[in-house]
Amino acid sequence: MNRRYWYVLLTYFAAYFSSLIGAPILMGILRAVTDLSDKQLITYASVYWSVFSNLVAVIIIWMLLRKTPRTTLIEKGEPASVGKSAAYAVLGFVALLFGQSISVFIMGLFGISGLSPNTEMLGELARAVPLMIVFTSILAPILEEIVFRKIIFGGLASRMNIHVAAVISSVFFGLMHMDLTFLLVYVVIGLILCYIYTKTKRIAVPIAAHMLMNVLAMVGQFILGGGS
Image (cartoon, rainbow, N blue to C red; front, side):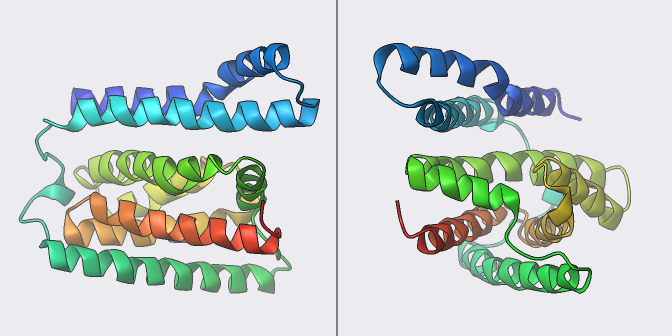
């Protein structure tokens, strides 16, 4: 695998786990300069650190990848045209909604219902601090598609059966959301995004579809939660 891809993975996971150290430090600073309650301190520190650390990660990863040649099997060949890519982004968004609905229906047959705790948590944070929408709707889709589709899926697909690569990368994508009860939903999402990426050879397309999906999820959380 391209050495820069290893740096990208390192950057992503550093940002992912940095909240274990960064958020408590930020919470201490906020406690010293504000009159926020303990609950508010935790919320604000979590949101501000998530946005900051992931924004830094996006910038670093962009710098790492901006001159990196297209090397994986998925990227070989001519990328889809802008028009076709836009169509795939929109249709991919629709497919994501449909895939989630089917997954939730199947889970319901086994007595699993309700919203994903991960989605509910992000919605609560966004209602408390709207800046969180920047993370959920922009930064997270960019980072996740680059890591799980471009690098992990693309790298595995260059070394094994593409369908197996899609399943492995999608399971990994689901596990990283720390929500095992709803793992099926995340795996289905991952598989659909892998398909979009494969058909268009443009990572921007699954990023766009992922963003649309997350924006809709946040809008739904605001409506269900009665707004901020």
